[in-house]
Amino acid sequence: MRTQLCGEVNESLADQIVAVCGWVNRARDFGGLIFIGLRDHAGVLQVVVEPDNAEMFAVAEKLRNEYCVRITGKVRMRPKSQWNTDMATGKVELLADTVELLNASAPLPLLMTDEDGEEVRLKYRYLDLRRERLQKNLRLRARLNSAIRASLESQGFVDTETPILTRATPEGARDYLVPSRVHPGSFFALPQSPQIFKQLLMMSGLDRYYQIARCFRDEDLRADRQPEFTQLDLEMSFVEEADVQGVAEGMIRDVFARVLDVELPDPFPRMSWDEAMARYGSDKPDLRIDMELVTICEQVRHVEFKVFSGPANDPASRVAALRVPGGAQLSRKQIDEYTEYVGRYGAKGLAWMKVNDAAAGLEGVQSPVAKFLDEQAVSGVLSATEAADGDIVFFGAGSRQIVNTFLGALRLKVARDLELVGEGWKPLWVVDFPMFEYDEEDQRYYALHHPFTAPAVADAGALKADPVGALSRAYDMVLNGAEIGGGSIRIHNPELQQAVFDVLGIEEQEAKARFGFLLEALRYGCPPHGGIAFGIDRIAALMAGEDSIREVIAFPKTTTAGCLLTGAPAAVEGDQLDELRLKLKPVG
Image (cartoon, one colour):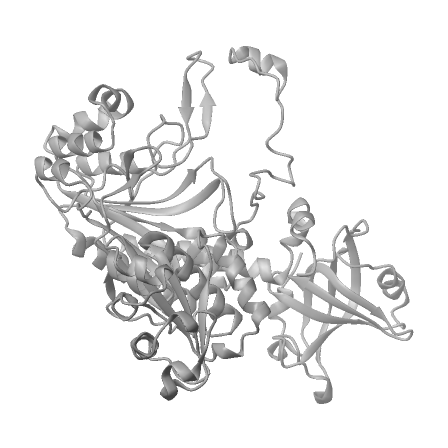
């Protein structure tokens, strides 16, 4: 039906006859001439219909936005004064010979611009996807997947599918359950990741596995989460941390070069989890932001202000400061808004200090807490934070975790508000994670990553004796403040695996019932192995410059895990429930 894509018609085709198909982006009738912007996925082409072509002029007069048409004609150069250098087709136009209406469009339920609300965009996603922004995003994502496959397969990785219908395993979120008709009362679970299967593939001798896998988690959503998502999974046998990291890092460098023509650093910097939390309040720090948290316990330990001196003298607590360059410009109203913001992260308040004259010490600062501090404390804080005239210093005091969390969040928000986020790409490996985290409310340990991550100690007794101090052999890859990948060396010893279960409170009987097949496999010469998983949705969003992964997913769900386009999830007929021997309880 067509000889060229709309966006590929340029001056090289001048004076040639072409056929193009697409949608009417805009139609303008100037009385004597009709101009049509014809759009397909490659771009927009200006079409001119002249009145001496009376039959086609009559057809063109009836065209409206999003009518689907086929047009043939001669490509001609525009007058130089009318060139549009912002368009690949901006030097030419198509003089229409025939205009064929393939399909009319009903009045549009949305504007098909960024001004449309997300609800209407998702309900009419097939229209929203016609837009240039979304077309570019999906095609970029396709190039990303292609580059990943090419990179890994060149290194001997084997693309292997794993089951979608499996059994529930502990992955940190609720499973989506699928009732079995053949086995009444029993359920499949949709996989939160192929974790166990990729480990079994290593036990099978596959050696190097990868898969671009669909995963499912029944959890509350936000901009960077979906109930169904896509991840790159890879696993390797006979490896240590450096082997997996080397392959993963090389692949990411290769992919960015292929897809974006961007050269990432070689090698990526590395940072321990402890250092990341101390300096940035986050285990996924955005290194484009040139601001760090500074511990000031020594500087305020002696003051009578108990809000500072109390935590400063408590080994389990922290007093930290965050210097914001040029932040003295912030109004009291803006500071109050930041105070409210950090309250969501557990902060009971937000102390601050504006620096008017750093050389003057206490006399040169403006702060509600200055009256509680002495010259030694203020001068010490200014020196430790390297504060200069025109800066503001925010303070956090209290439990180490809460201080890190709210100052880390504040660092990101202030940087974005004051346009202090640098350009470019800043990758990072975060390593040496704690093996477990302790929940005071539940009075039990949880695996920081997952229960199959190997601890840094190989002795089961040593692990059980000091679970708090145990480090894991896990590693995360961070890019511009987003965790794009995470992995670990896995446990390949059955005794050590049972020791981890013991710390987590998973009894031997329960462990055998839930994943006895894995424990059994560990007994038959399981090789040392490890791997990593990357979030394809997140990487695609970063590459596309999008804040939300929904913008790089063809048909995403809403934040309530619903599909506005299809109406899913939906009720089913009673006979289907009867077949599955299920009965619904009344809601409420």
